[in-house]
Image (cartoon, rainbow, N blue to C red):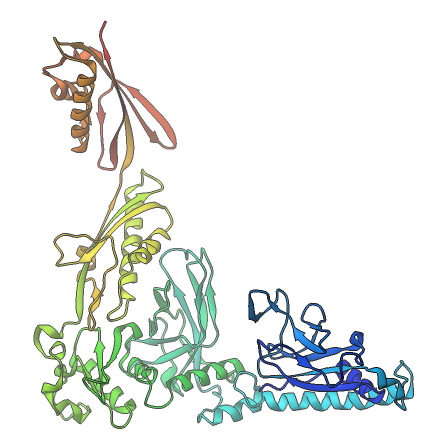
Length: 601
């Protein structure tokens, strides 16, 4: 139930209605689909033109409009207008009271004229007294609304918010928490607006990592490369002061954002945490509170072990392994990482729940490493995928071949190198952001590459590295417990370019041999030319054509009777050459456009 203060004007109107003989604030409870709400007086006694209906709609005080929101029927009922095809939905442009909320009806009736007080005009004693009373009542209602809103985290402010978050054991951060700014960026211009929510966690790659959160939401606008966001340390004191460039990990992947860095060191700002920052932090704490939610476990591991959320996967099987949770970690195993993960699980796990992870066998059995005793228990309980040896590898290697159709078909070497690097990075970043067991969506990968500037079209083949067929124009389903990775970014991502087109038009004048037809001769010439051009010749000249087409059982072709036109673009101009030897560079693609075959007379 929501409390909303009624405005002064509505209070005055209802009080005057009650004082001058009308019915004021006749209460009803609203539920969608109701056939109507009968009034306390029969239809014949109610003055329909005086009816007023008010209540809460979308948690705000609303005076409902007759004809648009409701109507008064001859059966003496107030009916809220519904969609003709669905009685549970309001009519077009109509407003309904919130479901389960009370709404109030005020009206005059035939007996209202018998009231002892009937003058409600401006300046009358009745109205003056009513307005004075309602002014005080409106102030009290506003104060009550403030008290009501001060009890909720979304609406409390100032000291009231401090009292609300104190229930979670939180206090407003002062100037002893380091603050600064980070730059979140991508290599190419954003193809659309990218939203970066408040409380996005970033951290350093130090051991132990230092975590920060963004204090407000930000948007990387379409066409931009980067956006700056304010951050505040989650650790009190000097631990939050880090050097420039130290913040370089996005703990929870934001699709479209590839990297983060702080261009300046973090410092003590001297400013207290704002209401919005405290509110966001409290909500985040509530999401991670306790030791019984996946969010709490993921937060503990990412914070203490310096991992990204997409590198983790929690698996529960209530029937096969009750009371056990398996954690898959998609990171190169090391004893240090395993110890940090195990420590985080020990600190955050709920009572009675056992955790096992795929790095357990790499933990050094040394007293100097503070790890959970669970490491030494029931080694055989782990499934085969978590045992030592080759099965410890979480990786599913993939490879990708990309054929790029650039806007400028005659790129310089430096331009081609830049575009090639951008394409390879877009592909790598997409795969790198996928979670354990997460599918590689082919169309999403194509969209990320097509978002780069300077590309007209692209052909992508992505496939598991051990797939000799390389049929990669489809989604790849990654098995549970594994994560798609590029083992060698340079070798596994191959980018090639379609060269600039060079168009050839041919005209041949033949002497037909006995019993030969022109159509058969034309077909023979076309087949030979198609096969020839499919080999991507380095040059086309008269001698090459003679060797290709002669001798023939159907026709005789003299070198003087073979003609061709070559058309291509150079520096924005269309160049045509007639019967000239043409050399084709590696950046050019010969295109057979037209073949005309004639018989010599």
